[in-house]
Length: 203
Image (spheres, rainbow, N blue to C red):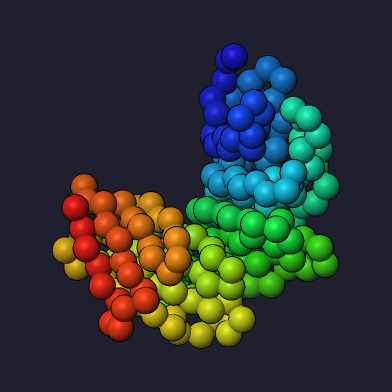
């Protein structure tokens, strides 16, 4: 099809969700935002999307019906986020997180339809480049990997591991309190947060 895919996510082996910006709409696509769609995540038949920096960035909630999307929620984040860098949903689909590069975090409780904001900027080493949520822990990548307890609000991280040799983390995933990351220096590494202090190895 014509047009550009700003982001896509695979929600099953046969269904692919396309969310295009209005600057390059593809045939049959859903016009999701007034600006570029910078992040998308899915769980339990729901899809959330976030908008990059614009005059009025929004985060949106969609219901996936077969191969189409139906908008069921929208929140302006103009006063809290300069724009959405990345987003993630809890595995049970009850909440979603949106991060901006300056360390702003929006937590959207999808069941209660309530939104809260955390400013983690003073607790980070450089701009946010990636993140991953595991239960109530938020793993944030920058020049280090920091682990925040979402139940504690905008408090300093409970764990942190510097990435001195690897450089800035560019991608991140988490399994069993281990953070796997791709780094700017062309390295792939793992940080074991079960160790005291955390231990990072790179390849």
